Length: 497
Image (cartoon, rainbow, N blue to C red):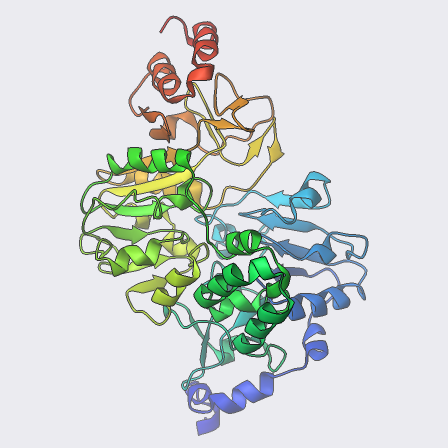
């Protein structure tokens, strides 16, 4: 065996390896063939999505797997033929396509999503080709997937071929995020430029409506380059309220504040917490739900505004954790605002890991006092928690990591699985505590795993309670306008309370 043939030579000569894998956009697309399943990673750059769309139009059929897609061209009149499946999160942008049955949903979980493939089951399928952004290679020839890693690395390790576009705007992160250039089939360079903040600022000063200029400049100062890259060309033209919401800036409404105040009573020093990205759970950091505690740990799926600032204030230190002690760990930092992301960037206190590893309840539950906080759309009087749909099966979103994290907290010694929701919807006309779910409702958490439900009106403790006791607990935290009717329905459902 010559020196050049030795396995370690790929590390010593990684620059040659990298150069041999560089392709133009058009050349890269040629690895996609008829009938392939193509994975379009979350927040895939538009230039890569557009090149894939053009290639898909040349083929008779191509199947596509999305996570929280934004790419409308794959769902309209110019969409390619083939299955369009959405996993984990549907998201706001493409929900109408799911409603119209143009897209379908893949009901997997992070903890089980790759099990069948890794076990060699014939029915299992992961993307044949993955499209994803990566960082430029470091001095040793390794790239990473940035703060929005999700399942990018997990799929890149298993896909037949990965096409990676090099994004100079990706923030540096720590954790199990690296892949060597020799493990990725194709790289595309030079199609994404570094963000030009000065140009964005000039467009705000000269082109934005005068009343929007000051708030837009404030958002610009807080946003990271990675956030800014997604809206760089249109930043000046977007309403500040919509732009701020898209970049993770949200206001705490009175109901969310009351929910946070109720949660403060449940959080203990040394808890390891997980907070979901849905509403109202994602507002809990900003609303001060954890401000009275000390030595908190973080073992979570995603981020929320204010998360990293909790570390900066010394509340979040991970000193009482069992798994990844002293580290705040997640699957992605998506959901954090720009100030959080700047704290997290290049900070070894924050680490990312593949979801099938990190969100496995066998691992996550090893943290004592694991406390999960996730949102729901409705809860019935038996404790069945619906977090994905409304009006009898109309899907609003997917499971996200709620099953994984809820089960982890339920199994943890001293753990608590908390579900939060505002008591009403549709401007107070609809109760979220219901006697029975409508036919067709998707139950995300079954009643025998229900634990603690929190609304702005209080805390319902369901664990180890019978059906009548659960109904009593849940009615007590329903909106007062609906309690009398819920009591009448409870009488018929479970008997006298």
